[in-house]
Image (cartoon, rainbow, N blue to C red; front, side, top):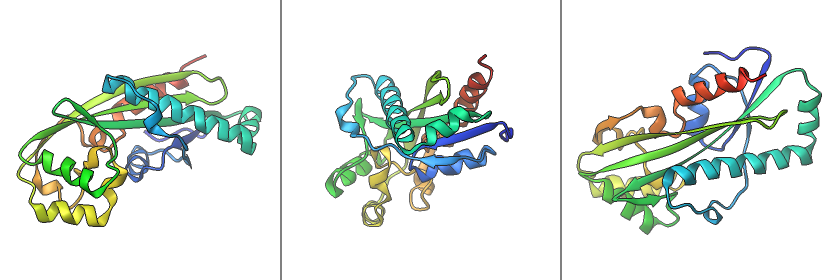
Length: 209
């Protein structure tokens, strides 16, 4: 669904996948990113962790907007400005995985998915920048893999994109997509921005008085 002219949308993310998905949904948006230390925020449950991280990203971006004058411009405007922040982790064998920090960690992560499966837990938070009202939710998907050859693992590590995604999990990559046996859930959820949940939260935010 395309955005109305009275809506201004900000995507608070540096993720190429999330940019792609939000564009596919028909929205035009401004990009901003949060500078936070994600490791400082710890929760035992993955659902709580990804929601907490989405809130922390929103807080950091709002602070940045206050400092650069963007907030005043939004408050003075007649438009409704919504900001989307999101986070995702991968759960494998009951362990939460965030972005791999070393080639060794990435190798361990990806090899672990071979002839196995992993779940993605992703959050979406929509913040009304002017009123401060927030709507949140999370979504889960599961990915089942065939055998992942060692040469594929090494190629992915050498290329480097695995270091920018939760669990080093790149289902849409040309090297890994043929090795996906099944996905329970939606591909957009696995890629970090579930369309149905995002649309629902945007609509709820726009219907607020």
